[in-house]
Length: 143
Image 1 (spheres, rainbow, N blue to C red):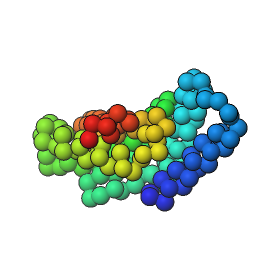
Image 2 (image 1 turned 45 degrees about the vertical axis):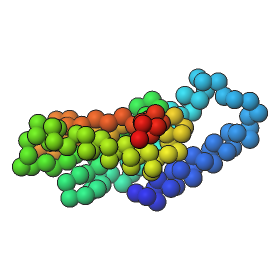
Image 3 (image 1 turned 135 degrees about the vertical axis):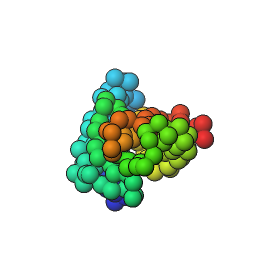
Image 4 (image 1 turned 120 degrees about the horizontal axis):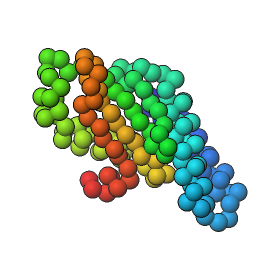
């Protein structure tokens, strides 16, 4: 997964560098958003090739998809024997802090390109959504 992220980062850097050479002025906001949407689609397509991917003993990354200039990572977590409600109450703030901190370090290029990362955690048992964390560049400033 790390190699894949490095490859995507390299490709994004190459794309941004070639675009910068071609343009002597700043891109209009509309064009930047369109470019970010394209980058998000390409990244989601490439990273999805290795899914599902077991992250740890309870977490599996199931889907990565683009939604405009956002990437959505959809996970399933096996929380048994805990109930969905218990996990939501006990683990929400701990997970949110860990997700934001990790994303700000590992996905800096996406965030700098104004691509938001959305993490959705569903129960493997009930398929209900347990958590949703939206990380953008502002999230990192709050750390």
